[in-house]
Image (tube, rainbow, N blue to C red):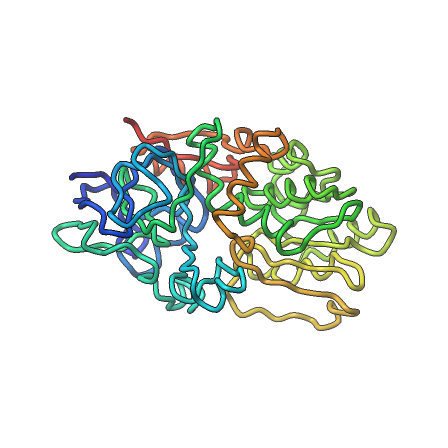
Length: 374
């Protein structure tokens, strides 16, 4: 069958092209995409020196299943998950499904630094562009009207939720919420700092609020983003200045808000290498700093920032266990605790993908979402 997909040449350019999608093999599922979230990683992937179908957040409807597929059937609504667990390797057996040794496209090194982006993929022959098989970003390539993925890449759901709101669970929300709840395990009554209040940072804030944090301090250079942060649970905001090297001035303001000590937890969600060590300056002794945004550059850290007994964690994907965590997130949404509809600031038709990227880079949206027409 013919489908439409956003394809990058890996050199900073992309176009929406016609592709050929085949029936899924035994352990694969064909999904008709209904919505795809947009995040900075999608924009970064334009320069990965590899031709791929873009997109790694999405929700849709199962159209065809392979003979061995048992977890979903035709007509099921599904959220796509890019960290596909095999269930059998050492890490999966330790419940570290997000860093599966057999299927993860990033744990052998990221896509940008030589990771094997073919790991965990459905057959390349299932999707062809100009007569040749083409890889899909992070195994799934959600910026496509149809995609063929491994069975483990889809999670069935029955919750009454729009496809746009469901789509954003698959990376940004899970990464932020999971970093707060699964990784840092924020304690009720504690103090939290979040550096950067885009979609991931807002999801950290929500995780902190749901965990019962007493004080949640949001830091950003964008006043509109700080207004969003309050909507999602921030109790205090600090407008950062670009001239504030390592955010040390902001760190002093954090201390003023936390009895002169600093917060118990600080989360870096900016993806700015120069701020990689900044959360260490925000926490008190024996506090926990979490590097959420996936900085991969070499950075220099003043070891004085580690004094004393501070912990620095570099988690992936909020330690996601898709079949466990996605239902938890959907249940929180159903209860009204996890705000997802409010995070989808704007929806765009597929042909307006350039505008979606433009608005994201300008910081206009909490999350922008592509909606595919029937």
